[in-house]
Length: 130
Image (cartoon, rainbow, N blue to C red):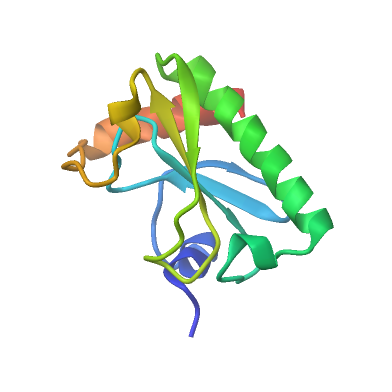
Protein backbone atom coordinates (compact mmCIF):
# COMPACT_ATOMS: atom_id res chain seq x y z
CA UNK A 1 0.00 0.00 0.00
CA UNK A 2 1.34 3.43 -0.94
CA UNK A 3 2.35 5.78 1.86
CA UNK A 4 0.41 8.98 2.38
CA UNK A 5 3.40 10.87 0.95
CA UNK A 6 3.38 8.73 -2.21
CA UNK A 7 -0.33 9.46 -2.55
CA UNK A 8 0.38 13.19 -2.18
CA UNK A 9 3.13 13.02 -4.83
CA UNK A 10 0.75 11.14 -7.16
CA UNK A 11 -1.89 13.87 -6.72
CA UNK A 12 -4.37 11.54 -5.00
CA UNK A 13 -4.29 13.73 -1.87
CA UNK A 14 -4.11 17.52 -2.21
CA UNK A 15 -1.16 19.44 -0.81
CA UNK A 16 0.49 22.84 -0.85
CA UNK A 17 3.43 22.02 -3.12
CA UNK A 18 6.47 24.28 -2.99
CA UNK A 19 8.99 22.43 -5.19
CA UNK A 20 9.43 19.30 -7.27
CA UNK A 21 11.92 17.68 -9.59
CA UNK A 22 12.17 14.21 -11.09
CA UNK A 23 13.28 12.62 -7.78
CA UNK A 24 12.03 14.79 -4.91
CA UNK A 25 8.93 16.65 -3.75
CA UNK A 26 8.45 19.42 -1.16
CA UNK A 27 5.17 20.58 0.35
CA UNK A 28 3.92 22.47 3.37
CA UNK A 29 3.25 20.45 6.51
CA UNK A 30 -0.49 20.67 7.24
CA UNK A 31 0.27 20.57 10.99
CA UNK A 32 3.12 23.07 11.09
CA UNK A 33 5.16 23.98 14.14
CA UNK A 34 6.03 27.30 12.41
CA UNK A 35 4.77 29.22 9.37
CA UNK A 36 6.54 27.81 6.33
CA UNK A 37 7.22 24.37 7.89
CA UNK A 38 7.92 22.23 4.84
CA UNK A 39 8.37 18.50 4.28
CA UNK A 40 10.85 17.27 1.69
CA UNK A 41 10.45 13.68 0.49
CA UNK A 42 12.00 11.42 -2.10
CA UNK A 43 9.59 10.17 -4.74
CA UNK A 44 10.73 6.61 -4.11
CA UNK A 45 9.25 4.92 -1.07
CA UNK A 46 11.98 4.37 1.47
CA UNK A 47 11.13 4.28 5.15
CA UNK A 48 14.48 5.43 6.53
CA UNK A 49 16.59 8.33 5.32
CA UNK A 50 19.87 6.52 5.90
CA UNK A 51 18.77 3.53 3.81
CA UNK A 52 18.95 5.71 0.69
CA UNK A 53 21.98 5.06 -1.49
CA UNK A 54 24.73 7.69 -1.28
CA UNK A 55 24.00 9.31 -4.65
CA UNK A 56 20.29 9.69 -3.84
CA UNK A 57 21.00 10.96 -0.33
CA UNK A 58 23.42 13.58 -1.66
CA UNK A 59 20.89 14.77 -4.26
CA UNK A 60 18.16 14.75 -1.60
CA UNK A 61 20.16 17.00 0.72
CA UNK A 62 20.96 19.38 -2.14
CA UNK A 63 17.27 19.55 -3.08
CA UNK A 64 16.38 20.25 0.57
CA UNK A 65 19.03 23.00 0.61
CA UNK A 66 17.40 24.66 -2.41
CA UNK A 67 14.01 24.54 -0.66
CA UNK A 68 15.51 25.87 2.61
CA UNK A 69 17.03 28.84 0.74
CA UNK A 70 13.61 29.54 -0.81
CA UNK A 71 11.98 29.41 2.63
CA UNK A 72 14.57 31.90 3.96
CA UNK A 73 13.59 34.34 1.20
CA UNK A 74 9.84 33.87 1.63
CA UNK A 75 9.40 33.61 5.41
CA UNK A 76 10.95 36.03 7.92
CA UNK A 77 13.35 33.92 9.99
CA UNK A 78 16.90 33.81 11.31
CA UNK A 79 17.53 30.45 9.63
CA UNK A 80 15.85 27.22 8.62
CA UNK A 81 16.15 24.31 11.01
CA UNK A 82 16.30 20.69 9.89
CA UNK A 83 14.77 17.69 11.63
CA UNK A 84 14.62 14.07 10.57
CA UNK A 85 12.37 12.07 12.84
CA UNK A 86 10.59 9.63 10.57
CA UNK A 87 8.49 7.72 13.07
CA UNK A 88 5.02 8.89 12.05
CA UNK A 89 5.02 8.10 8.31
CA UNK A 90 6.99 5.16 6.83
CA UNK A 91 8.48 7.34 4.07
CA UNK A 92 11.76 9.23 4.51
CA UNK A 93 11.12 12.92 5.09
CA UNK A 94 13.04 16.00 6.12
CA UNK A 95 11.33 18.76 8.09
CA UNK A 96 12.48 22.28 7.17
CA UNK A 97 11.30 24.72 9.83
CA UNK A 98 11.80 28.51 9.76
CA UNK A 99 13.43 29.48 13.06
CA UNK A 100 13.60 32.63 15.10
CA UNK A 101 14.23 30.70 18.33
CA UNK A 102 14.88 27.10 19.37
CA UNK A 103 11.26 26.83 20.52
CA UNK A 104 10.14 27.11 16.90
CA UNK A 105 11.25 23.53 16.18
CA UNK A 106 9.61 21.93 19.23
CA UNK A 107 7.40 19.20 17.77
CA UNK A 108 5.67 18.66 21.13
CA UNK A 109 4.11 22.13 21.15
CA UNK A 110 0.64 22.86 19.83
CA UNK A 111 0.58 22.99 16.03
CA UNK A 112 -0.39 26.16 14.19
CA UNK A 113 -3.83 26.46 12.63
CA UNK A 114 -3.41 28.27 9.31
CA UNK A 115 -6.23 29.02 6.91
CA UNK A 116 -6.20 27.53 3.40
CA UNK A 117 -5.54 31.05 2.09
CA UNK A 118 -2.48 31.41 4.35
CA UNK A 119 -1.21 28.00 3.25
CA UNK A 120 -1.71 28.82 -0.45
CA UNK A 121 0.08 32.14 -0.01
CA UNK A 122 3.01 30.52 1.83
CA UNK A 123 3.31 27.76 -0.77
CA UNK A 124 3.25 30.28 -3.60
CA UNK A 125 5.82 32.55 -1.96
CA UNK A 126 8.23 29.70 -1.24
CA UNK A 127 7.76 28.13 -4.69
CA UNK A 128 8.54 31.50 -6.28
CA UNK A 129 12.10 31.26 -4.93
CA UNK A 130 12.54 27.48 -5.29
